[in-house]
Image 1: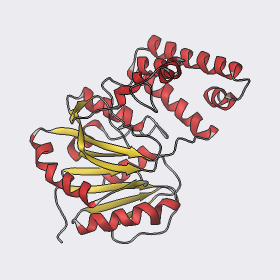
Image 2: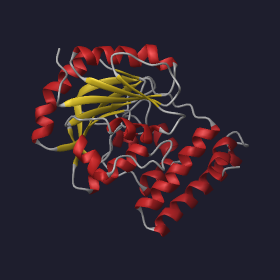
Image 3: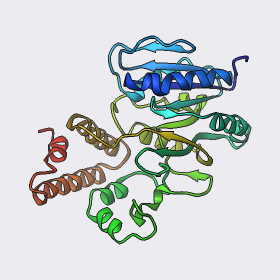
Image 4: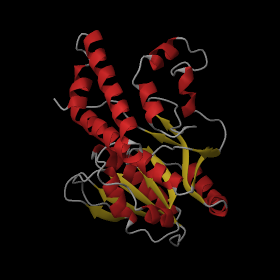
Length: 288
C-alpha cells in the first residue's frame, strides 16, 4: 500500500519492555494502512524497522521528544502517542474514515476514548485544568465524594468531569494518544520543553485552545492504554515542579502562589495525619 499523505504517526518510546509488546505491533499495523511512523527513542533502545527511527542521546522528556518527531512530519495530521498504547484495526479504520470530518470542522486536536488498565476514565474535562481543579484534587473532597458516590463504583461523583458518553468539543484531552494538525502544532511552537514530566499536554492544549482552535473528543474511537499510576519520588518531584511552572506561566502570580501554598499545606497535613506514611509526597513537593 502507498504511504498516505494526510496522516502520519509519532511514537515516543522509553521503556524497552514496551518495544515488543506495543511499539512493534503498532508500527506493523500502521504500515498495513499506509501510515508512516516516526519512533523517537528516549531510552537507548535498539533500532526498529518499518519506521523512521530517531535515537536521542539520553532522555530529553516526552514533550521534547515529540517536538523532534513532529519536525519530520510532512502530513496534515499526526497521531501522537505513548509507547504503551495498543492500536486496533477498528480504531485505525474509524480514524481514517473520520479525517475528512475533522478537517471540515477544522479541529485543532482530536482525542479518543482511552481505556486504561486501571480505570475507565476517558481523560477529558468540561473545564480548563487549572487552579480550582488543583485545589479540589489536593483536598479531602475527592475522598469524601468517593465514599458517598452512588453513580460510579470506582470514582467520585464529582469526578464525572472525566466522563462523557458523547462526542463533543472539550477543554482538555488525554495526552496518551491524540491527533493534531501539523500547522497548529507548528503555530503554537509545539511542546514547552521546560516541562520534562507531566503537564506537557495540558500546557500545550491550553495554548491551542487559547489560540481559538477546537479540542474535540471522539467517543466513537477507543484504544487501550497500559497506564500505571505508580510514581517514584523522583517522578513526583518532576510532576510537582511542572505543576508550579504551569501555574506560574498561565495564571496571575498571586493565584499561582496561593494554589502552590494550598498544595503544600495539604501535603504537610496529610503527612502528619497519616503518621508520615505519605512523607514521600511531601518530600517530593518540597525537594527534600
